[in-house]
Length: 203
Length: 223
Ligand SMILES: [Zn+2]
Ligand SMILES: [Zn+2]
Picture 1 (cartoon, rainbow over the protein chains, first blue to last red):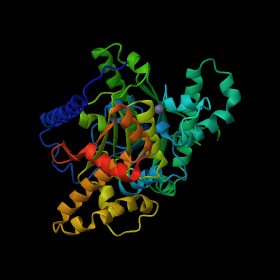
Picture 2: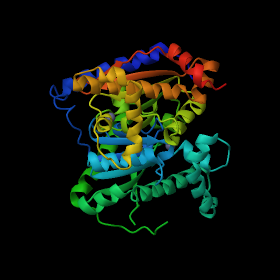
Picture 3: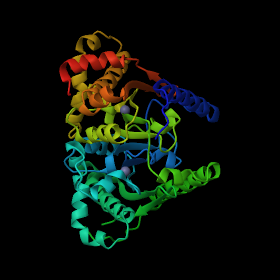
Picture 4: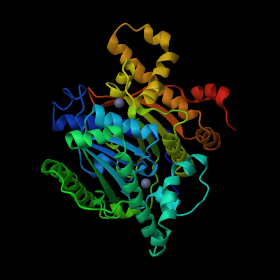
């Protein structure tokens, strides 16, 4: 059981954390906020899981302003879904990122749920349907693995590959790949060690 | 699946690519030094108290601006921190965070100088972005009188950013997950904030959660 903390204190803690962050930023670079509001120039679009243990800027030790971000349940990208495709269009067409990273992770709740068919309610059932499809189409391969942890991890990898493929199906992304060398990459973040590794997603 | 083959990556991209991995290793080392069991604890599961819904904008990194560490906040970020009523993407996030993770607070965080809101104020055909940005134009329509009354262009833009953030809060409160959990547990509480890129500070829009929820439930109540 989590210890119950009065709600007011939890919010106060964030607001104090914010003040401390702003102060530290200025201490490190008194000019940091000059021109910061005018334009963003991130090199990377990160599409990751909403999981609290995988904060993109923190785990890649990046600075604010370096990574444009979309995070959803299990880093799913579908070709016909407006939310993620709006992010792709804006990041590639307007902000002009140079690379796109799709990052899955070990211990992913979405992938674990996709190993079975438990009813998660209509929203979540629908959202993780692609992962369940991947599980079914790779059942033989998954059966050979020894633990649910490994089966879940394999679904994570397959899902990253699927999302990478769907990112590359976006028309704006395709144009930028041909026109200015935009590249798309698949990563997996390993929670037990904190380390990122690249998946081979070239086609 | 297509059979994987290895393709050479251009050198300048290779470099920025490697930097992410290099920085990641540095971060791991510093975390381990401060707390050798840090990753072991995270492997056991996540128990975040907060769900954060914010803009994709690179200048507004959730954990950093709130001073929270890995494992403390569940995060959804899209263009202009929208919560469209029929968007499965954000709805599945809210559902999971409320029903499975039992978060105590949901923070919607907009930010001044939001490019998404600016695009919605600009009469241009944005292709696939049109239906997405239309949600922001709907917020304008809901507050047409107030916004039309603001002469100064920047002040109008800033106010739309605030109203758009509050609209997302309202849409969260319309969900069955939030209404049912609140009735049973008195949480989650929904907060609307705006991040200011000029000084790095968060501004609480301070709308009255209980009062707003009551108003919403008059029309949208889901037992
Ligand atoms: Zn996950
Ligand atoms: Zn924005």
